[in-house]
Length: 115
Image (cartoon, rainbow, N blue to C red; front, top):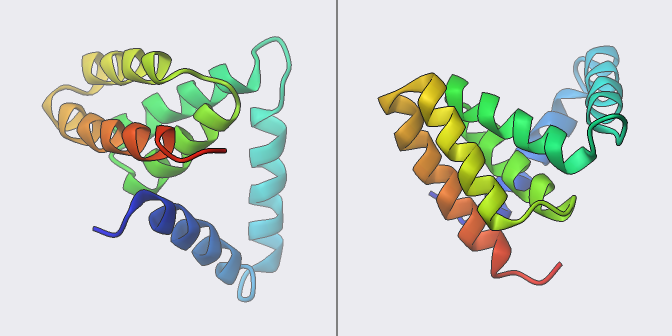
């Protein structure tokens, strides 16, 4: 697998490239993404952790990479990400443990890179 920053960039560029073919859908998706994850009653970092738990449970590798990076960027600590992985394993069982390990690798990769 490529490194986590390359994976993040690939996912984001790939979704952007879909916009060449389905611009309305992708524009709407990004509008929803920004609105759903904006600070509100829950801070953005908490919302990113929720999205990460769901990404682990539904086994979306690209989503895991993106939400780990975005959670850390929004101010979540590595420890908060690890606890989120634990909740995802509770809800998703063994497969979530495997994908939780992918999230752990992303935490280590993105925590080592200065923002």
